[in-house]
Image (cartoon, rainbow, N blue to C red; front, side, top):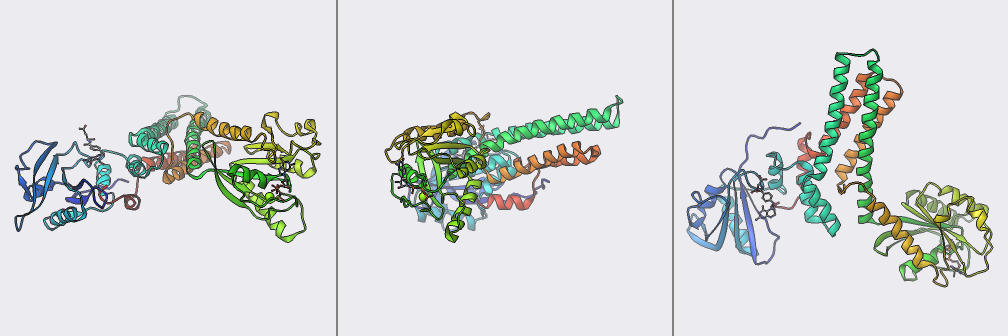
Length: 463
Ligand SMILES: Nc1nc2c(c(=O)[nH]1)N(C=O)[C@@H](CNc1ccc(C(=O)N[C@@H](CCC(=O)O)C(=O)O)cc1)CN2
Ligand SMILES: Nc1nc2c(ncn2[C@@H]2O[C@H](COP(=O)(O)OP(=O)(O)OP(=O)(O)O)[C@@H](O)[C@H]2O)c(=O)[nH]1
Ligand SMILES: [Mg+2]
């Protein structure tokens, strides 16, 4: 639970990146920020200037009265500041020496060097932002793409926090209602009513959490690439397709079945969709020891994949191995590619359509470069279709948030199993309350000090 902080000393840090630049900023925050700044400033009396003004003058060493730099000093009084404390920002000439000298003088005259993230931590401890918002500050700094920057900005705005708070309120409301039902049973079937109430709410909140987790998976794909397994019998043309999508002869292609013996991973950009393409050894029963290991790895790659591209050879009838693969992948997001369309067709389409949906099947000749563009477009549609269909603009990307959402979901699932097994209501309430607590850890409505230390220590110095 939230600890009460009694003392906020005055902290100082360089807020701009090290190195040469036009201007550097050294920042102070805390009760003595303005009086300390006034001691090291030659110009107006900073203790008397209006808040939110920037003031021209010189930075001096108060002991020697030596001028260190020509500066502009912003005076920002609590509470309308980033930290909610009195804040002073010294804008000096950019460069390593003047900036460090200024920091040194502040440190020898009463300020303490800020820990990484301590300014933002104070904003959190003073209640200006919640934990998810504080974390988004860091995500914003580290964002590598427009999309991830936007996700971080939305989170800084408190969009995720608001969603989480609403979920917590819903849980709290139902818990309160359950208490009332137990204490003042109005109806004879109070037990049944209470279970119904709990079940409906658990299902509802669970579904909303699942929606958030879907956005997390999409965020992961944007960062890490869509894990795509190329599978199929030996010799159907998996490695040829990989090379084609890569525009490079990476994998060895021969007409010998069993050419690829290990799993090959390559990143490809298919019409803007990042794919982590995994070429696998053709799956078949084999006595060759090396190939056997390769086949086992193929099965693992299949399990780990987000998308499966299953290749079939159009110039041969469907085999039992093909059918096995079709059945093995039927619950996966998949594309069936009928390759070698340039040869005389021998595969019976009617037989194939017993196992798959027509819409899943694409026809190609990798050798003749036919149908590849359609395949690429199909992959892109599958992917963007999923992203655009997401219900919310919130994109959960933070690993801590994802883990907590998953735990909260598990607690709600425990509520549902408990109700199914007709456990006493007070036991079910425990799991419901647990879900409420776990969600609270996302926003920092409940937290432990170690978490704060660990979290803010990942920040930049001066942030
Ligand atoms: N010079 C400078 N630029 C900066 C920052 C800074 O601290 N200093 N920031 C820091 O990273 C960011 C801006 N973030 C900020 C967020 C809140 C407040 C603030 O004063 N909030 C007050 C109300 C402000 C008002 O309405 O006037 C509050 O929420 O109570 C200031 C900066 C980016 N640019
Ligand atoms: N006619 C024809 N031949 C193709 C086509 N695609 C690939 N091939 C040939 O089929 C043979 C096998 O291709 P690979 O890409 O090595 O097949 P693979 O699925 O990786 O095979 P394994 O690694 O043994 O599992 C090679 O001789 C390719 O040139 C195609 O569309 N038409
Ligand atoms: Mg191969």
